[in-house]
Image (tube, rainbow over all chains, first blue to last red; front, side):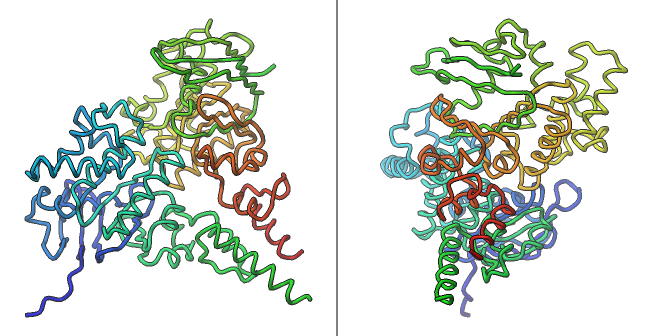
Length: 284
Length: 280
């Protein structure tokens, strides 16, 4: 029997409800391959966090199936899945509980019963990757929220998991901190990690994700390359989202031959310069 | 007379090596809509705490200089007096909402100030109406969406009929629609009720569209103060400080825009500007 190439994550007809209430996720099917960088977007309460919590077994389907590397999550423990899927919570303070940054980052590794030397090595690397070298002995709550978010990220990085899930990693961060965190995420993606992140910031989706899944009232409203999804503002509006400013601008300039799927300022700038050059060319 | 005036104000937290706010000077007229932005740790929240009396009444530290509300020094006012003038709304509505029902939540501050029931009723209805949430009056606060919760928090502040509404990153937990909802409400309160709005916000696209004046705080100092286009014209400096420039304004800057007429602040303004540019 030849095994078909497995999806890294496969979601089949997933429905989830909290304690007999209205389902939060309704019959969701989704496949995520190795090496993807996927943004999950949708309004508050659309089911984004509920969906991604299924990827590391924090939640189990009420009906339907979720497979990670071909294994169904139903019977698996979170601690087993944690070796494949790392999860960074939206609020780092829900995650951090040790009295030093070093211990916090080492916690998961100790649970894996890795040798002390290996743990030290990984903690040092992870702190360096998030720009917190020198904070090994710092009390986490003396750090800024942005820094605590990076401690949480370091804890997950140190686990060397194949998949990293980040639930609104930039909420409450300023512009520079957001860029720092996302640049780090980008680097992880380039190193081969599969990345899944939730965000409300459409400019981050445009800049960092290859693919986006739009959730609306527990269902998938759209799933595709970021450009393709952002080119359909009427669809996004159904989930109370709107594309980034620059994409909206492009969509208002359709009659000037600007395509509706522009997603960066630089791209728009180049298009306008070209439009201008073409025009000058034609007039001469 | 300025509704709020800050003169040579410097504040240091206990045991801090350098001041959290350094020689701040600011004068706010009644009816202004002011956006305050800057990187985290710049002193924005400290500034807000100085304006609603949390500093110095509840927090130690050392302050020099003066802050006047309606010409009277804030240091001589009790927090109860200040709360009638300055209504505060914080980042996380969860941290602010304490009652299980929306109506009770609005009644809480009024009860504390000892208003008679008839007056309370009037103010609660008015505040709910102004924030567009009259239909939520008897709802459980737990079942509300993030945007609704933040509107409840704004309604609570409004029930006190403050002169100034002070909001500290009120939309950071909200989706784009919830964010726009909050700014629409603020804009309406400002235009129709004449309420002075001071809002700390990272989302500069909203500030550019709604505020009449923007302050940039960095490392404890007020480093920029002007109309949105004046502030967003200083693109290199803003990038160095770490303040996001609205995408359409950044584009205009790259195209050489440098004044009120060539630095659009909203998508619609940018569309008109670009169309003119393409045609010329």
